[in-house]
Length: 200
Ligand code: GLN
Image (cartoon, rainbow, N blue to C red; front, side, top):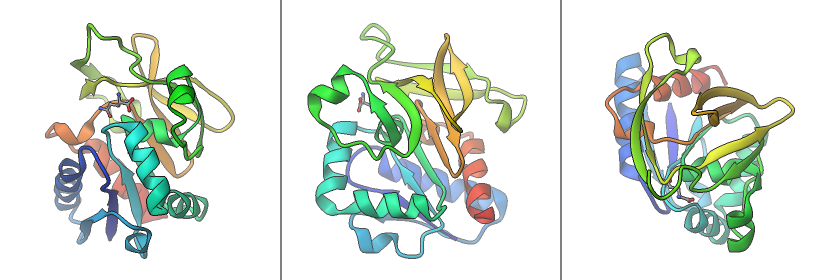
């Protein structure tokens, strides 16, 4: 199995490590590779768009040509996991900040996002988050200048909420979470994603 991590900016190496840990846990033989140009997505079974700065990630994906490539892969059923800034890039609609910065959105998920939704007082925090698809035990979720999903529609399904805000969504082959699952030892989300990649 080969998982491509979009490596233009942000928490890339952390995702590579978390993906490798999850592969070991599941006994999957595979690799997690750093992707900086379109050709590198050839033959990947899954794509991760990391957290960082969504304006930068979106614009660089555009200039490198990864933007169209990721869209094609998504349309062909390749599973995609977007975390934090990655969640923002997956959305169809954004708030005033998204509009003002003219950041390109992949528009792959039926959801509208609000950037920096948890305010300046709470720039970063950790919570025990209940995500039923990952089992009964809550997941320690690290939020860093995190976005939230304001609304989902169509076939997008809410996976988790925190303080009435939607923080995890799944739509078909794509999962988006507002937090950073790659920064904690619990690999259940990456494992869930890898199982999606196995089935695809
Ligand atoms: N605040 C960032 C943005 O809006 C996201 C932060 C993150 O990915 N940790 O792009």
